[in-house]
Length: 160
Image (cartoon, rainbow, N blue to C red; front, side, top):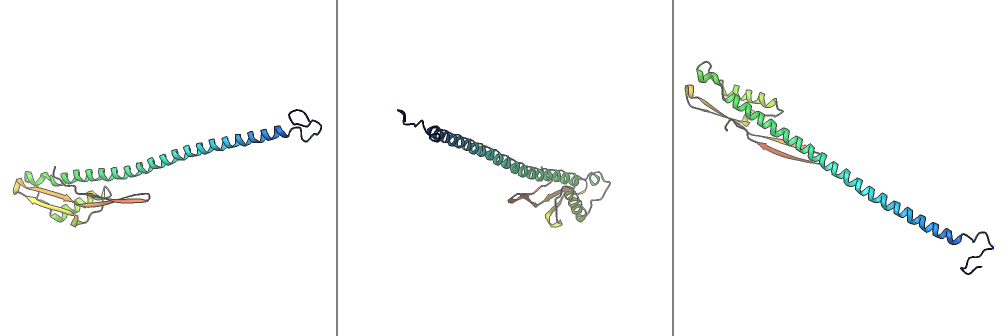
């Protein structure tokens, strides 16, 4: 044995001290590696969660925007139907209320809006060339996104 306590004569005991240091440094390296991998996993999961939230928000926004645009288009069609020019210049007689309701339902179906005749309000005003027509529709649309749904209520009319 020398002054440090290491015996030189036996082959198996010479590297004992060095092996302990190598083992603890290997544990230290693997521990550092696993910490780094854990941090990387957390960062990746945050990115994945963030992307999933953005995708869900995009889906919801798309569906809400499409409902709003369909409502605006239907409102324009209501204005067109109510602005029947023929009776004002004396060419045509006004269509019946049922015909007007059918025209509104037909226009609404172009935008995937299901209407019943009871959902359409019709009011005639004035006489002769001063005849006016007020049209309003009252309907609801269910917006479905993954794990949640809600109802949007619309009341478009030809009034400005």
